[in-house]
Image (tube, rainbow, N blue to C red; front, side, top):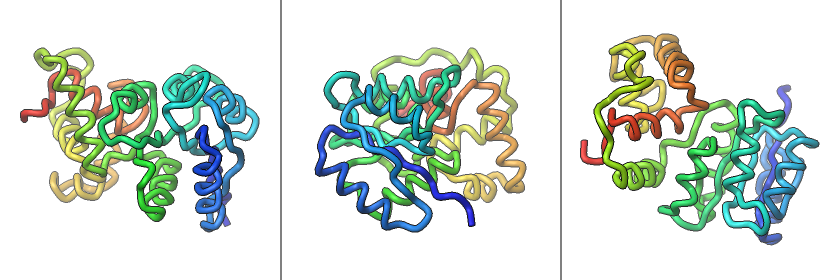
Length: 222
């Protein structure tokens, strides 16, 4: 039997923490290893309890969820945890900043319980939460604020097939859907995604989407 996915909950509301704990601990294969009421405490507990996934609120006293996410996701740091941002708002500028800081995605706090549990498993497996339409709207909203220039920079190093794969990732396609759309094998899709992550120095699919928008490969109007 595989080890359960270890979860740390960071939220300044005790009631929400308790609710999430009850939900997660009742689910086979998942367990809560710690709770934190501030960003500082979340970073501290992540170092001592080594969770696989951190559920992170944005607005907390002291260190907020964005800075805590940055520290938890820093590839050069000693922690390197995966973070799911929890928010009350579907178009919150702080969420975009958190994605830039390295979060693997975000969920609304009123997300159905089953979706939350599934999200934890997805992120623990190394994927990112791009399926919800709200995530794509969020990225598009803030990409619209900056006029992208010609496609350049790191994207010049990717192949045509990798570019096609990246465009489908930006549309929220899963690996299986990309396989069917491009008529290639699943291992080939995974190889393209892995190559994109390496060439673009991206942590996961969420950051690939952000890079695509900010580089000009994709725009909200296209």
